[in-house]
Image (cartoon, rainbow, N blue to C red; front, side, top):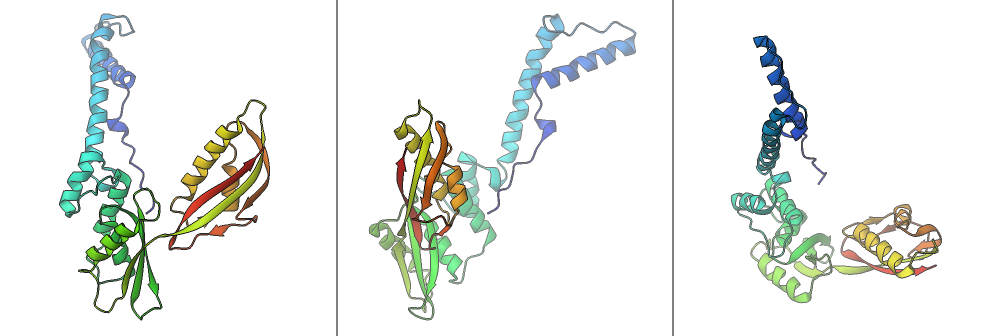
Length: 271
């Protein structure tokens, strides 16, 4: 799903200084209408000491109001507000499920009606099972209407066989009679990266390697296309001056991860 940015709400998001300045302007306008001298409003004056805390409180309340307002909308709801939206859709949060994963399930539910056994339906039904992080359904040539569903756990790793069996059992009631349905742990697709780094004299190779590995694992998660140039940009962490001899799965080419697989990373880093 494309990212939907939260709307800017400048009327509801003012700083204390902005609010205080409007208050001071109003005081000056009232004094002018009365033919009086406007009160001193600079920091340290009595009006400032009385008015500025009020401006701070108004600013805080504006932020709380904006937060509460946005929680009414599914794309921006979180925490207990997201759970309340789930009650509306009749779809509860799975144990250990993050806000982002739960929100996406609810959005998927809102966009689709109860399916008739299409590939996307099996994916959605599998993701709704507690413990499942991701699901990809693939139509196979085993029979005319066979479906294989490959699943991951909540950490993005291939699911265990026990979880796969549980999902298969729970999908039985939804399975269309002609469908030969299998639920399987996602396959493992090895990604091997080799690179030689040029480091600053004060850089520690192990710390640098850990930083790079963490960034690349984040990049790989859920990605079907691994771009050679984008991986290269991730080598430039603190302490790295340059790099040479970089290969991705033994070549200098982009890599495509099969739809039924999740990536596992092996790093060969030298300096």
